[in-house]
Image (cartoon, rainbow, N blue to C red; front, side, top):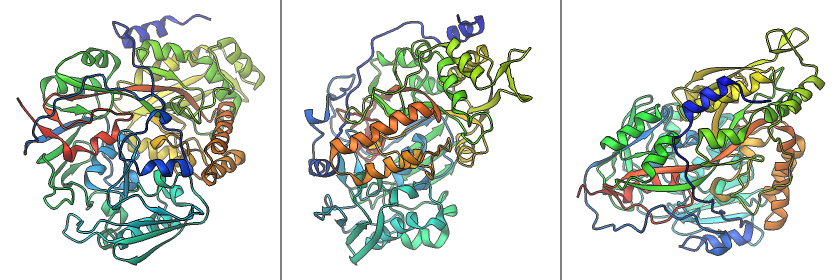
Length: 564
């Protein structure tokens, strides 16, 4: 079956004028358990054992001497609905939250754990159940109060308390207790070994016990106080967030006077802001045409990395139509995903085969059920499921139309064409996917509560920090299980994956998870993007290599502005 004229029109609208060869993906670290722990104390990025490294698309940069002053301005595609660390999942949120807060350990742009509020990597007991952190002394929160072990205990126990219904509560499921023998020692005891402990728990931003405990989480979302290099000055969720340098920061006052994120939903407007100098960086990708054009512009430093976040359509598996996996499988066959990759995203993406990116080489499973573009097969599956074609071209069963609503992010110029082309592909096999728009905060809330049929956004289903765990996203009780996927075997495998410290055995669990996800299709997994991140040449202090981009913004305290 050929593409309709409508599809051709949409593709012409979204297609770039030229094609180019893109950087190949780097393999991120596949080590875990004791092997990973041995690596963690290193101060350099992983060597060949971690796979080929993605290089910057520019040569080594002359840094010059740091200069004081100025405001770095970045743009994001969606509102910053909360400044709480528990809501830092979306990139735009993270970029702001990381300026205000710190964690015991933080991962850098090459997936290497770095001690921050901890003096060094923690001591781990031989059985892998106890982690002892020695904390930095002389660290203060933005209100001048000292940071101590009590703040670590309070933060971790807040996540552990079911009454708080924390988004990231699953990350603390293995924590039994947190002890504070003195002001600068925190001991975390686990119920069972957790191979993802460093990635899940110790990278959690710390909040002040004396303050958060007084005002509560709801108030803290708009009035945060952390130990970070910048403190909140102004916050208007849908307009901008402005943070200013904290003079008392333990790593020294930032070179910048301030860091500002402006909310600009339209990707084309973010590109214009870069070219006019009104913005120093866009923390979310531009549309393909602008990526290609700016990639060769000498006025910008371009850092291109491989995304581990899955571009996908989460589907409410509790929906009366979408609960049938045959419908979900048919949709996978109905959409020509390679055309989306080539014609909408300029070939700057890799087709997804399940929830994990092929860049996560040690845990990736290529031997899973696949869904090549085959509209005839899609139609046959729907026929078998009892959906018959109606006179209006939309299938029906028991008087119900095969129709659902996909809610995309308001103003999302990058993914809206993807939704529109997919809509036309689905229409050709008799599926009616309506498209509506809503702010990302609304989408996340309603997908979590099963009040929305479907959406389209990028999210990591295993791979954050190079670790394959996806308990928060794929476990039946996962707080970011947007599709409400419920598979007891997947729950079991995810639990086994966290307990297993042997890398090879651990990988086998996640490979089986991928096979189940590919068969069940709880969401329409589309692709993994190549991410283009542009910085104006006036921003200095950028790292010389990177496997992932978001942590680069956590280093804004090291950046400086040079107008020369």
